[in-house]
Length: 493
Image (cartoon, rainbow, N blue to C red; front, side):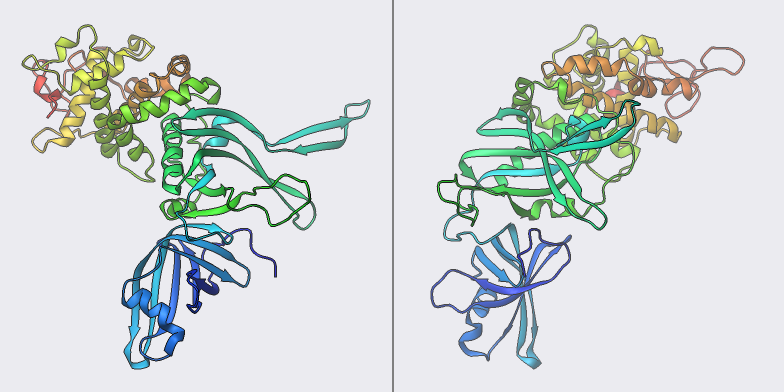
């Protein structure tokens, strides 16, 4: 039976564990890739009987002496496991039987040395959103027609290409295409992907590669405003050349499957079927190599603004209140990093900056004039900050209308994303185009659709049914005798 090229999810593989120590017996085990534990290995052994046969297993689980790296050799699967740690054991005293369990931090397809730390030259990953962001394809189709423009044949060429490359710290990064042929019943087919690669010299552990690639994934989350998952990893390394040997031919380093416990949950999540990735703020053409390199530095410098927003947007489910809180944490951080703007003193409270001040700085940096939506920067900043504080503080009036909450959530997360992306060279032009396009206008026109306006004091005031004049009401819907500024409502605490 040929060895498997991939580890199938939820399939139990039976085989032997090898610790690489001369003279120690091999240990029988089953290996399963699960969504909860990642790669789980189960080892049955006798607790007191069995002699030398079970000495290794008893030492691993009874004396907490599990090796950090092991090889697994089965009927149709050979893998090397790194970062192994015991996850539990079950004892059956009446039968003198126990089952020990351990998980691995990383698993590479194939037999690799285990006497050295696991470091790799290149890791190549499939990530949601890469194809939509780049539009790259490995397939080129040439149509052959007759004199009447009727297609009589096709020439199809499939070839992996590296389309974008840049330096990111000590890593060389690239985005390109990858493909795999298949022969299903009834014809020949090709599966293709757009992949993200990181290469280090000297080689680095999986955690370093993953952290480097997450910097790019976080950028895509902000671009799309939707959750994105790591779907698959492969490794290419000088320590694992092709077993095929042809005289005078260069050494071939194939890509081999790599399973990382940190992203196993991603692997099991269903792909989204909605249109959340159809409207990116900017596609790959807007990002020069310089902008992508600068993003790595900005990812660290602006981490207090980026991480709360990415953590929010990368969730599968959240409430509008979650969005308002998470986005405003990001806006506050961005506001601290952005320069003061003209007129922001009007948002101060007792001569100190407030949440509204930081939101105002983010709004003022957008390359658009909000007056076309009958909005002022100051009024919208106060409203967003007031909504945030009404959720954060138990003694503040709540927003009663759910449609108002949803709209303020959409505005908060969109402004937070634009404020960050607009700092990258060249991407600011794409942000300007986005702010002049339908997706941005659709959100900002929401107040008019809801028949409310935002006063310069940051209050929602509904339109009168009798005339096009607002009736003054507070954010909680309570009628006001006068529309007055409430500086404490926007106070950052």
